[in-house]
Amino acid sequence: MIVAQRKPFEELKSFIADKKKVLVVGCRGCVTVCNAGGTKEVGILASELRLDGQAAGRELTVDEYTLERQCDPEYIEELLELVEKKYDAILSMACSVGPQFITTRYKDENVYPALNTCFMGGAQQHGIWVERCQGCGNCVIHLFGGMCPISRCAKSLQNGPCGGSSDGVCEISKEVDCVWHLIATKMMETGKAETEFGPAQPIKDWSTSRDGGPRKIVREELVK
Amino acid sequence: MSREVRTKSNLEKVLASGQFAVTGELGPPPNASREEVVEKAKHLKGNVDSVNITDNQTAVVRMSSLAAALILQEQGTEANMQMVCRDRNRIAMQSDILGAAALGINNLLVLSGDHQKFGDHAQAKNVFDMDSVNLIRTIKMMRDERRLLSGRELPEGSEPRLFIGGAYNPFADPEDYRVLRAAKKVEAGVDFLQSQCIYDMPRFKKFIARAVDMGLTEKAYFMAGITPLKSLGMAKYMKNSVPGISVPDELIERMKGVPKEKQVDEGIKIACEQIEEMKNTKGVAGVHLMLIEWEHMVPRLVQEAKLGPSQRK
Image (tube, rainbow over all chains, first blue to last red; front, side, top):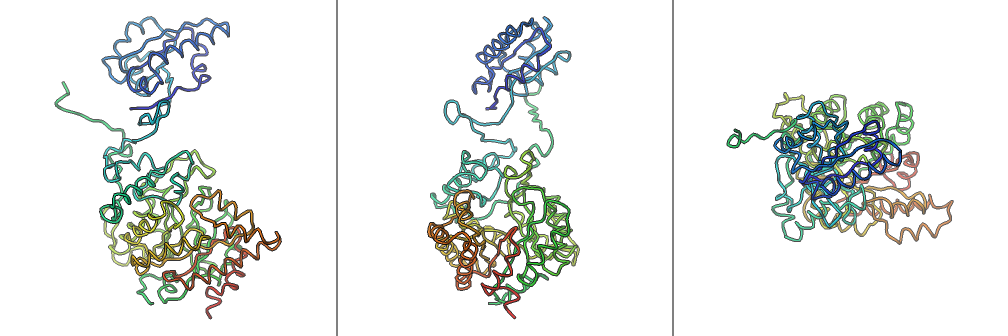
């Protein structure tokens, strides 16, 4: 899933400093799963903004709504009725795709991102999410014992580990596992280190990655 | 042991003749001062066979390695220009490789590069388009196959005739895998390899013995990295704070047993003992002296260790 986290409250407050009527829009997709922008988080943010407005003695209405998904025009359309109520600001609690889709559909609205979209990953345990993919567009994790050195190595090395790998952790932080330590250890344990894993990986073709420009997928059979 | 010489590199000539080679290291200044490079170069001239010029080491902005390498060469000492994978994509790398060769650089040593998190520009976007293994392959392809990565041919005589260097670290982890990673560099076509600073001699000897067994030291020259300890504080810092460096407790104890004002002498003495041992270790083709910001100690070290051009004559 896409993992995101809420922006600092002060930053969100600054978005609506001169606004009187605000709509907070959540998303039931990835950001609900990672506890960043679902119905519950929409409720929490709306309450915090109302309380803060009250404390400051200013007039502020905050409405709440959560869409099935914000990355699909079909669901964005659901906002039409609400948008007609004329909000001064819409805070989207989806990944950054959501506020972009809302802005595209409702061009006159002031739309702000309430989350920082961080990475594609999963929950290592409850409350801890880790990055696992960078969307390079050509998955080769099977060559690396099922682990992705593009997203998990600080240098995206194809032939690690570098000299900064020490005690299983990366040189950038003791909190970061050296994925190349894990890959190399697995290769040695499975007896592949000197055989099928022996030859160096070739230079990577990044043209399928973001380096090739913004990407688009067209599935003709699905296009009406 | 004598091997074929394929470039104009002085370092290659020394190594190929079977003599025990010695390289130094010079960190370019964090400014445009030509004088600072000239000053550091004075201590190295005549004492080493060639000098590594670091490429924005620890991700701190400095004069470019190519510029500092040329200043050094004007002073009469050959440069091992370093290039890291952190800051350049394949377009800039190949371009700089061609440019460096055209300007008279004979040795190019490649590294992954310290992550920018350590430096003074932690906000930078890193590149890592290719890693050091693939950069070695690329230089070799440009030199021996006269081709760029695009497949474009280089007319005969216009290819970069570079002696290709790389690094190896017997002290990083996982320990058993380190020699296999060095093997990838050898397979990629590296001509010489220099190690991280060695303090843990037993672990180094285990590594090099395995490299000899695998035939790696016949295909590339393995040089041993030496950095004399300046003080007990430095020994402790190296042990506890630098990832990928192993300092045995015996060395810490030995430095502890010496009064503070004698610790420099003790550090040099330890380095000389290590160098002597390296000369008698099968598979070690020379030593790489890393005395960054301590270049003035190089003349004393090479003299006491009986190393380098001045001692060979």
